[in-house]
Length: 165
Image (cartoon, rainbow, N blue to C red; front, side, top):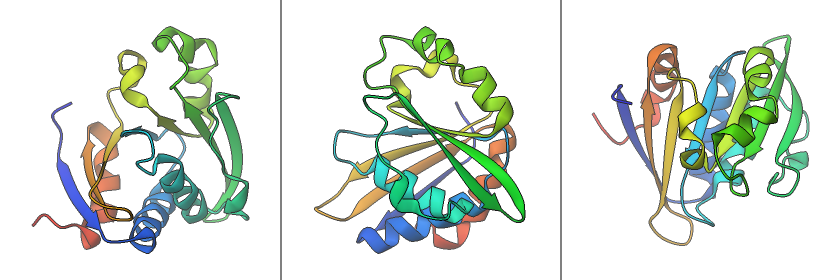
């Protein structure tokens, strides 16, 4: 991917929550968000905030799908029901495993948030938002976001909280 990029640094969990909620509010059916970062970087925490911003009534139901591989949440996004598919690729061997889980159908029916996306990059659509999470301290994070194609509109929704000009 070589699309537009944006860097956002946050000092605490509240900053991560603001970022996730703003991103979630901008999501539309067909959007794919690829999450990349080390263990403990906050991928699931960010997904919880994205789900809240998209309109999941109780974001406490959002948890890591490491062992079930995919969780589905329903959101009320601007008066429309939005399906959010939360996939975890950590235990997958390759992108074919994600495809076997119905990845194409998920993309057609809702929003797909993929943790450990670097493990299945070969099957991700070219139009997507990639979020690289870098821990800077116990609660501070650097988010490097790169968009391609139609996902560029998601970056636009986040510019107000960016650390890059």
